[in-house]
Amino acid sequence: CRHHCGQNSSSIALSNKCTAVSGCITGLVGYLKHSDEDIVCMAAQAIQFLSVNRNNRPKILRHSAVVPNLTALVTSTNSKVRDFASASLSNLNAYVRKQRTHA
Image (cartoon, rainbow, N blue to C red):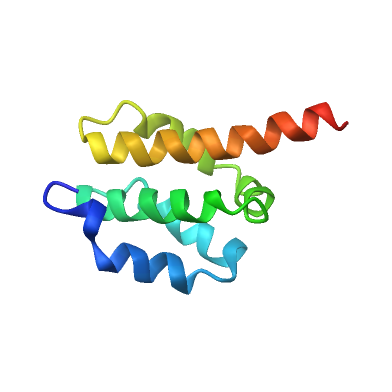
């Protein structure tokens, strides 16, 4: 992220490998708290990519740590990390709002 997270092919490959969303979210959530800012950025970007797909949102939300960790990143000093975290939370919130209106 400090250098080129938005264009990092590793993060794209990471998100493409996560076809088993539930299985990969656990690892990605762990990386959201990593000491290396680039790794945090790639994990946040991968979660954002996954959260774009509406079918992935309930699977992502099953992981209780994902929302608190993304929320903490909204105040990151890194603008890319903030943007990915905010976009992910927005996508996930859209799912929650929709579930509440159909309940």
